[in-house]
Image 1 (cartoon, rainbow, N blue to C red):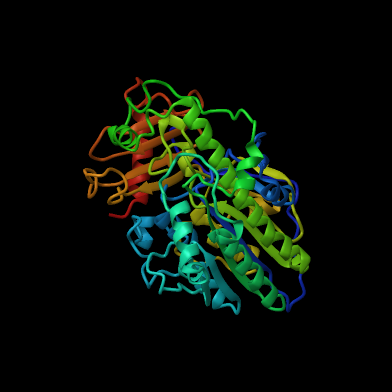
Image 2 (cartoon, rainbow, N blue to C red):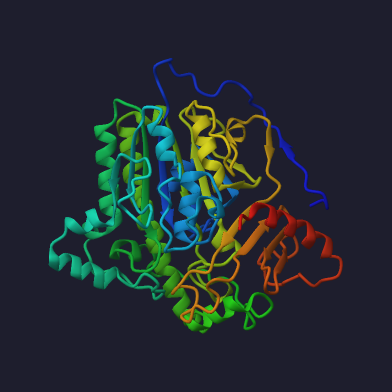
Length: 465
């Protein structure tokens, strides 16, 4: 990247009209969101072991992005950024325990105000689930629990209760008892009930989030396969922020053997395939009803998953496995079907983009901006950097909360460079052209002071104290 950040203009062949609907017809929106899906772990992103046939099918008719970034590598603030189009320091839900504020304007409000039936089904992570945030129809974990018997609920909690568990093994539960099965059923029910009016349906699944305990049939998909393991060294995390090393050691991840890691990855891939099957149930219903001809479909995840890379699991860091997310957009006319976009986009860009794709002016004063022209194959001023924030979460980052209350990690990622800026600690700089695995912290290397200064200025400009 040049020392001076510039705007990159992308041009593609087609610049013609996007939708050709009648004046009375509005495009619907189906937003499919998973939890903790690493971008690389999907067939449409080139993985030849993990099985994601339904997501791959959506991608074959859509546009997928290889450099899409979440705005926080943890559920609550990331999801807040997706639905509001603003960074966490602006929308206010910064850590896992923060409810999205009542005054936050969301995609639910935006589409409801324009006559859409709005629904949020599944894991939205609003924290205070009495707040609907513009979504008229709301289904969450308490609704799932209410449909189970006391014995079923106890058995499911024992089977699926270890939210941070990273030991891969098959579940003992029937598939009908999983939360995501219920969420898919309810999303299908909503589609059937609202096939004659414009709708905004946010279908949000829990998987492939830990525990790594998929239903037996998805575990068995990987029977006998020797799964590839991420590259690891005996000196992981020693050259950067020491909190990551402390966390990995405390959680028992650092000493995970190759065989333990293999079984954990098998469980993770099983979770992905189970989530993919539920995505397929919803998308297949959309097509069965003929609604795909007038519906913008999005698939993404709130953040990624380390899956053993750098001897870590889950997220709470700025490595690519955590902050890079899958993003696929399928349009009714299937423009640019099957194309890959390699320019940078952020999840805060989704709300203004989806507004434009559905025929409305994008909301103003957001941190995000529309990338709809890129989806149409037209001229597009691509972002030069992606930005993300991580605030240290209580009772989650380390057991003693030693970092809680410290200023956040601020990430700025350009085409070549990534800065993980800590105002109170040694920061990290990675040259992604030479070191795509992010193994060498180049913060002190000769000649890098200028890029550090430039990216730090961007981080501080985006961050609202």
